[in-house]
Structures are given as structure tokens and as C-alpha cells.
Length: 484
Image (cartoon, rainbow, N blue to C red; front, side, top):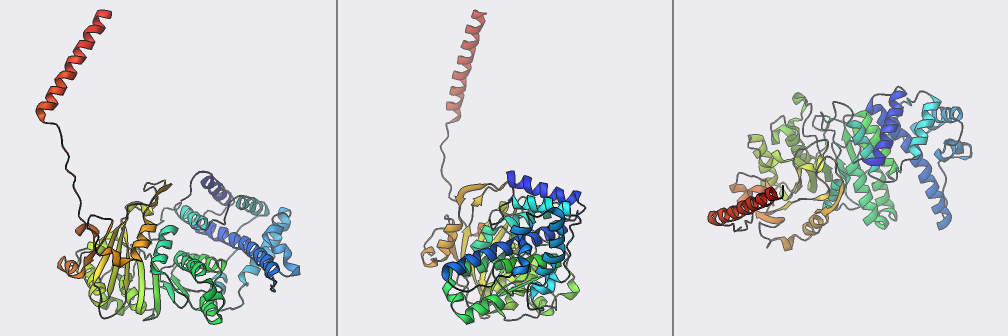
């Protein structure tokens, strides 16, 4: 969430683009992302050069001797006209052709990228302004995207609301991916889930990945898959993944719900926040998905899609609107029954409605399940999240209260959850009880509220107190009248 000084800096940056003739927020996002990527290349190259000296291992810079002027740290100090010439004629073609594999996602979506900053003076102002922003904070880029997207009236019509990074990280930690997993987000946007999964793997399995040639190759080429229907998002996504050290992510232009997507029994992990609303061409929805659930609601269709795309034994953590949990239509009941009866539903984590503020106030939950094709649901774990580290108003300021560490700790020790009472934040519900409630998965259906008896004065005591107060007021008024 952008506030205070940072918001002022982004507003100032936005105004520079707007007054310079670039008024489409998505164009602004693209141009800012390109410049962030160029800046990142310089930072990453410098870090790796220093590491090679410290470790005594060879490292070949992506900038050759003739390319030193293409470094952000060099061209930013040059005169405006010289900087513009270098960025337009050398740096931009350089990043468009940076990836050697012409069939890679990066090459594919950068091919039609256009450098749109029209003048040297505007570029100089933008570069100076961007140098005053601390981009190393991993949440900044997503916040900038979200904030700029909020400036257009159509924001959110296709479900393009960014998932908060701390919620993404929680979902990643709940599934705890391993170096051998194959991970997909069929509605990837800027690849927040994939980037977070990569960061988690580097933190928890660094040696296993980078000291094993097979695992390293899998990490760089085959592990991460993302689909989206917005080419701007795909360009940002490809650069985002490369910036985070994934050399060749599988980022594709694809309507995941259509026959374009033939993925079946392919992935071991799916992490997603699919669109809850937006345009849907019902006629092109894959017949395989409609066999599971016949509906036009994208949130239900995506759940059916996840089941199809997962391998047997594969796991999914996805965000769903609360309506999915208790909706009474045949389609709602059918998808819940499919997950509970034919697969293994593990957890429902109910989140407060302010999680997506100020851009949406919808109540949501995280659903976690495993594809088995033969059932396995025994007890479903419910958690009533009441705080996630930020205020639940439009300001979303950091606060101390945060249930996320507790959620992760309890989920990783479900054996201890069996004896918890229904009045606690978390508890387990047997499958038979859920089936008896028509597969209703709303936490309020099962949570018990503990009522504490309160004692109040009797009416006679209240009247006596009122009479005493009235006498005191009358006496005080009489004293005041005598003084006057």
C-alpha cells in the first residue's frame, strides 16, 4: 500500500508521464517496468561481479567493454541528450534481445515492446525521480502497479486486483514447494505467486537447487508456468521473473479456461487468485471443465480447471470469494462436492474483507486441497483470520496484530488441532458434518460463539440513580442562582 512520501513520489512520477504525453496507465506501467529492469540489470551485474571476486570464481558481465555506457549507474549522469540517445538506440534494443533463446517467454513478449518516452528532457526527469525511490523493497513494484491501475475507471473489471504480497507468501509457505515441484498460476498477472515461490525455494532449498545441475536446470526452465490474456502483464511478468533469477520461465499468452489450454495432470502445485468477475466467452470454455461444473462463474470454472491441471497428488492453494463456500446454486454445490468427495479438501482459511482494500471489499478465503481422484477428505481445518498485519480500512497501515505466523504454525501441526474447541480461531470439522450441511464450507456454519453473561442494574436501581443525579443538578442550579 502506497502512502505518505512514497505516494507523493509516485504521483510526481505519474504527472511527469502525463504531462509528457503518456496518459495510459498501462503504458506508464510498461515504461516504468522497463526502466526498473534496466536499473536491476546494473545492480545484479555489480553484485555478481563483487561475488566473483570474493569467491574467486569467474563471471562474465552482460555488459561488455563497449557496453559500459548502457549501465544505469553510468548513463544517468550523462547529459540528457546523450542519455536519451544511449537508452533509445542501445539500451532498449539490448534488453529486447537480452535472452539468447528466441522462443523464450522474455523474447516472445519483448519483441513488440516499444520505448515510448518522447523527449530527452522527460527521460532525464523520470530517471532522476526513479533514483529517489527505493526499488529494492520487493513490495514496491506491485504497489506501484496497483496504484497506477487504480487511476483508470476500468480497474478491476477483469479482476485485475493485485494479491497482497504477505498473503501470497502465506499461501506459498502453506504449500511449502520443493525443488522437484512444477508450479503454475493460470491467471498469473505480474507473476507475484511464481516470484514468491521462487524466493521461498531459494531461501529454503538453495544448496539443493543450485548445487545440483538437474535441479538447477529444472528451476530455470521447467518449474514455473504462468498464463494470462494481457500482453502488457506478460511483458511485466517475464521481466519480473528474470529479475528474480529465473532464466527461462514459461509465461504464455493463453485463455486458461478455453480449449487453448490442454494442460491435464501436469502440475504438482497450483497457486492462484483467479478473477472473480469479468468478461467470459462461455462458448469457448473447455468442455472438460464444463463436465465438472456447468456455469458462467469464473471462480467456479477455475476450481474445476485446477483439478484438471494438477497431477494426482498435486496440491492447490487458491483464493476464492466467500460465495464459493456457501453458494446454493447447483454449480456451487457441484464443485464443492467434487473437491470433498473425489479429492481431499484440507483447509479453509477465512480472511477479513479488508484484505483487498482500498480496491475491493469482497470477503475471501484461501482454499487448500489435494487432487486424489478417489476421495480422502477426512477432517477439514478451518481458521478464522482476524488480522494480517495491516489495518482493514482503506489506509492499510501496518499494525502489530497478525494471525499469519499462527496460521502457518497450526497448519503444519494439524495433529494438535483435533482437540481444539469450535470457539477457537481454528478447529477441525469432520467430513460427515460438512456433507450433512449440503457441503457448506462457510466458517460461520461451524464456529461457535461464546457468550459471556453480563449483569446489569435493575430498573429500580437505575431510577434511584437518576433521581439522585436530578437532585444534585437541582441543588447545583439553586447554588448558582444565589451567586448570581
